[in-house]
Image (cartoon, rainbow over the protein chains, first blue to last red):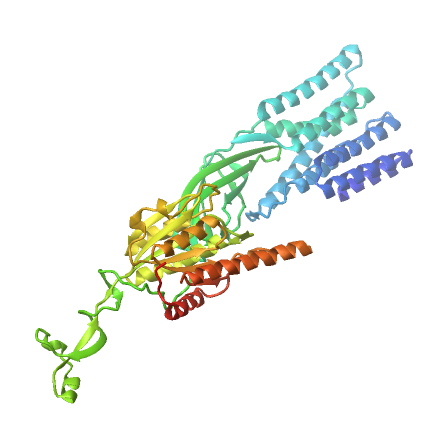
Length: 160
Length: 423
């Protein structure tokens, strides 16, 4: 919750449209708080989505320049989501081996670091001047669709 | 192992997809960068996902135990593949408790064996099957859940502890077999009975020299022979009154176990008749084997709902030997058992009824009418007891928390003053 509050507040106070962005951020925090209190994963998902939506709005309403803080924001967003779902896991009174929580925390931190790295790679790729054009736009759309399809395929084959 | 997706997997897929679409709509690569970690985590988490393979073996250090004692269970877990987070639950039936950590969260490497020790407390008597082990594993990123239930059933019999009895009820008649009870008749034995004048044929070793010197003529000792007795425990399993974990059948089984173990310890022959929806009987016998037979039969005692009318005629004649003492343990709730007991008395059996009182298990309703009904019910029970007493059958009320010895002493007092009648 602290990470989410920090992200929402920092985004809201960073530039113009403070009231609007703070409103979205507050809604995200309430959704997260409700989801954690009621142990309702859908509300947590909505909270994380609203935090991401706040970033989208900030970017859409802000300048056209690439935002250098995006990798850090992406890592924080992933950290918020990971910690929130960790909190939602069934609270069975379980005797755990010493160090299992530390291993889990290390996995979360490494995931966030990896996520930040991937976000930075995306930004570097976006900042590289290749020359625009319809074909490049189409390639971008195809890449996004392929990424979605890959995620869906992996989820289907591994889960189903 | 059955595999299922967690809510997290669906949410991350939705967030990644929504982010990528929003990046396309808004034309901002930063939004794709925000969504990319979720997509990458999904791919990283799902790509190497393989169902974990875990084997387990369960051993108990004893198959029989007495209520209140402990049994140690050893659960060996063998991981064929590495499992990052394995939640392991030894599913214990009601009546068996453990202070060991259960469930446990383990992390196992490929090929690792781990032995877990569970100290199990046998809280309640019964025949149990232990060994349902529930395994629940998650992948490193908690996207998938694998569940498996292993059936490693091991039988465990927990016998009722019973209570110590200092003095048992004795039948009016003994049997012809050797035992430790002095009968009314006189014969070769150790127990002194009386003195009488010497008659030709008496053995010299029987001469009481002091009495002979005092009276001036030879007198001999008379003794009682040592004989065994037959005791049949009549367990009423037609109906019971129950509140929570305790009921009249539980109390009856505990009393029956106490009586059987004490009578067999005194070399008497003990039989069992479980008279109810399902009929179960053991002919009289003695020894440790018979004790275990009786205890095993008691563990199987259950209330089976039945509307079929049953009377004592359906019992094989060998289950109720002549001159046997029949100790009935009954809540006196069912007309069939009430009638069967009266029938036994009418056939001349030496009968004593220990009424396992259902009254503590019954709460009168709140209203005046309910209170009246409850009082009427209590009056009817009193009338039933009176009718047994008129037949010469001692009926004592025994409740939870009251020593069984007190109930037996009450029966003994009745039998001392009551006259044996043939109806």
